[in-house]
Image 1 (cartoon, rainbow, N blue to C red):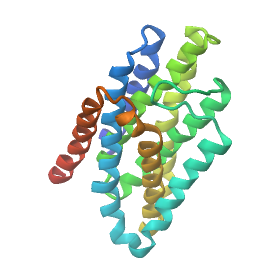
Image 2: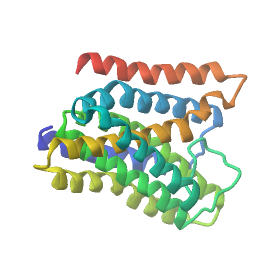
Image 3: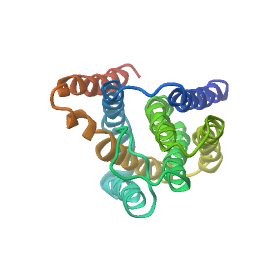
Image 4: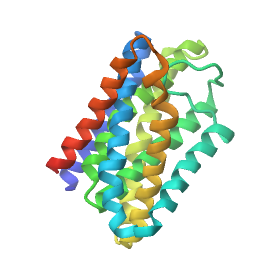
Length: 240
């Protein structure tokens, strides 16, 4: 991807993340609307992994493909479930420590998203990864900001400042990754993408996908949104 196009994309990721963080400070979305957005995002992430990332890196990693994907999946699982507190993107959870731990948890995801973008530019996956990350960042910011608003411990000014810092994580991670991966062997870059694919899988399966079936009465709408997100990735695979 040309730098003239790459940098505006990073600015767009920053802007869409800030938008997601800004909305809850004025109006919290209904759970029905939030579930539809989350279901669509789950479809985007799953489609990006199975129709774009894995086919691309399988030619480089071969039989070693599973190691990097499993590592990324378990990495996020262990960090999220046993070390850090992560605000789940379904909108409501039974237990949360709202504060620094939540920032660290979801901030770590954002840095990994940036690394995925950087690695993707080395293997002709930049557009796909950017689409997946961009769509994922919006509900992530909505969830984090919404939790802070509900907690009532932070003023609007502090929440917006924290979201500004959070919004910078992915673009900065991408810029650093571009510098680090420049000139490295394809196997190393593909391994980094495999780890990113594993993190995408956990986010979609562990954090997002449960939303599709948590509301039985209107579950079919969430399923349609999931299929729509997956279809976007299938169509983009045919076009790119």
